[in-house]
Image (tube, rainbow, N blue to C red; front, side, top):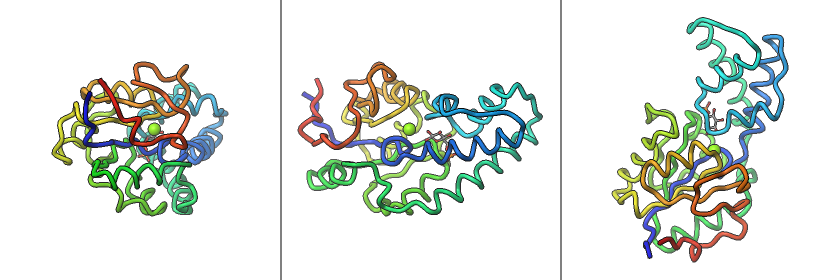
Length: 216
Ligand code: BG6
Ligand code: MG
């Protein structure tokens, strides 16, 4: 039985539901470009980097643009998105997350963030959780997007623990693959139909406790 030494958390969709703000901001951009963008389209952007998200959005709209214009549009979407996340408050932490983080700290299990988002530091500040993390690895500190394991391997390194002693919490398939590619245990957050290859999948943290961190 592995004794888990560290938990690595994805942010968007695991600690907070920011997908709704990403959705509003991408939809406004799509509408401005003259096409619609649905919630189903938005599902395709979960766990995907900002640049790749824009490319998918442009594919949906059948629009081809040069790199300079793409950069402008990604920046414009981000400004809009940031205007929403600046208003986030601690009551947006998803149910059960804070209790679970407290349990981990009490039991000496290390905590890291492993997020693709460049806005992760701002979100953690807004929800008042920055101090709970022993290491924060986000979109500013990685060069390869999930499913590449870079973000989680850097997290384990920052905590000075072996990947095999880590468990990752992820809501996106690319993130589950990234955890597997890092040689870590992984718990999916969401529905098992959408999340393959996790040790197990749970709907959220409400029924989570450290006794469930047992893996062979
Ligand atoms: C991921 C989200 O966590 O971060 C994606 O699931 C998002 O939807 C990505 O595109 C990058 O986020 P940001 O905040 O840097 O644009
Ligand atoms: Mg996520």
